[in-house]
Each structure stands twice: as structure tokens, then as C-alpha cells.
Image 1 (cartoon, rainbow, N blue to C red):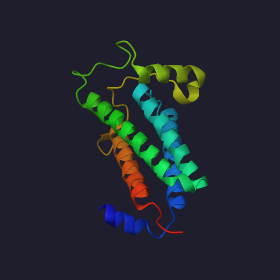
Image 2: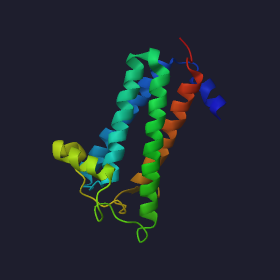
Image 3: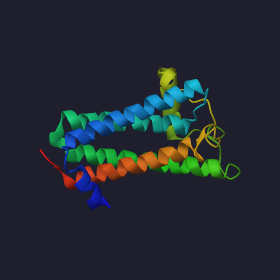
Image 4: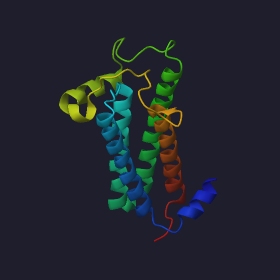
Length: 172
């Protein structure tokens, strides 16, 4: 499959793929925030942390566009953040599937993610204020919760980062 994707991507330079990934991730953040406001959704700490990861991936991908000489570094960083985001999204998906087994965010001592989100929420409440519960499914589309969709997106980002890392230079 990676070979097929590499061939499909070969018509464009790495810069185009980094820009597409960067704008796509920042677009995901914008869409998520718009859905939050339109549907009055209450994001949980893990939702906010995933939003932060999308923003970081988007900014790193844009760095890959503007500074293509360090493409391997950017791809490796994006892959690492995609793994982290996928793990968080998978854990949140599990929490939503088995809420009776999950320890809800905020009901125990805050972990590092929750502490970071709380601090960011105090600095920039319009972007990072967490007011919801991690095990609730407030929004479902085609049978998948927002956490499920986020898991799929992080997987796709990780695959693209691996291809960008492996292929090194697709074309000039």
C-alpha cells in the first residue's frame, strides 16, 4: 500500500504534501471549533489535547513547506505527534465504548495532559477551555464519534508522514 501511495504522490514535491498536510490539520481545528460553537459541544481535556496536537502538526508541516531541507526531521516529528494523538484518540474511543470501566477525566488527580489543558484553558479559553466529559459522545457522524474520526485522521497523518520520511524527495 505504501508503494502505491508513493507512486500516487510522486507527481508532486514534498513541499506540496507538507503544505497540504499543514493546511488540512489547521482546517480540522477550524472545523472542530466551528462544530463546537454551532452544536454547543463541550470539549473534554482529551479533545482539547488532540486539538493542540493538530495545531502542532499543522505548524510543523508548514515548517516543512517553508524549510524543505529538514524534511526528514519534520516528517519524523509529525509521525511522533500522530502516534501520540492516535493513542489519545484510541484511549478516548475506548472510554466512550466502555464508560462504566473508564475513570472519567477530572474525577481523579489531573494527569499531565489535563494539567496542560487546564493551563492552556486559563490562557486562551476560546481555544483550549475543556468543559466536557471524555466518555460522552456528544457528536456522532456515520456511526463514529469525534474521537473515532480523530483516530482515523491521526492514522492517515502517520501514514503520510511515513511516506514523506521514506521517500525523502518525491520530485523537484
